[in-house]
Image 1 (cartoon, rainbow over the protein chains, first blue to last red):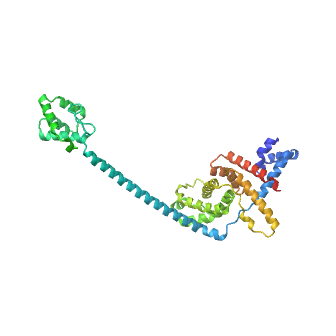
Image 2 (cartoon, rainbow over the protein chains, first blue to last red):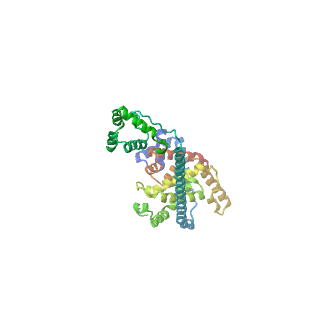
Length: 194
Length: 172
């Protein structure tokens, strides 16, 4: 056995975990190798000293009070958690309220603006894509006031055909009918409607 | 302690929890003291270990023993404490007893040297040494507990012993 092998097996040797054959090899090695023998001696003496290093014992009183102390801490912790949860609920409620208020204020302010919607009487753009409420209102207004655009009414009844189909219907209107539509659109008060 | 009823523990049964605290409190304290080398810190960490264990009891799935689980919590708390605390060598409370002043001085020196030597070990190395040397824990169990390979655990133990031997070599 060489010094490297000795070193690799040293801890197992100290702990008495080596198989007999290897233990014999270790014993043989230290008979001839002074360096490894001194190293082993030093480790064994150190471990003996460390074995005597005692932990200051817990008194009986401290042992007995451990459980109540732990429970007290758990209780404190749960009270803190409950408070934090309450605070979080309060904050989120407040935040929601604030958010709703801000949204309401913005919507009220926007109501007064006249330039936010533009409606073109062009079949492709007739259905105002970004606001179906506007479309719905327009179609309803036409139908109520005029029986001329019956095809569009049918389209509405059939649960809103898509834009291109409506465009086709409008394309088929005569010039007179289109003029009538244009007049109708001009008379609509969009601000009120929005 | 008899075989643990995991479901009962997870439900937060107070009697069972008391049994756990009574059974393992002192054992944990012994390990923690050897890691942090301070009585007050060790007592505080043991209490906190049980608090954390109770709060996180639903996370205990019984894959390891409750003791191993508690040691892991205690180890993590101890490591956090070591990182926060500046390395200082204080007078060991064990030294207050004893009648022979010369012997007492000698013991004081030995204890202080051990304190210094142990505190100089990196936390993981220190813990491996303590669990192996004082608790006779198998390498496999230590490696599970510290989440490292068995070979690494063995090497850490070897390094720790060599370092302690180099530091304490002139004591005898």
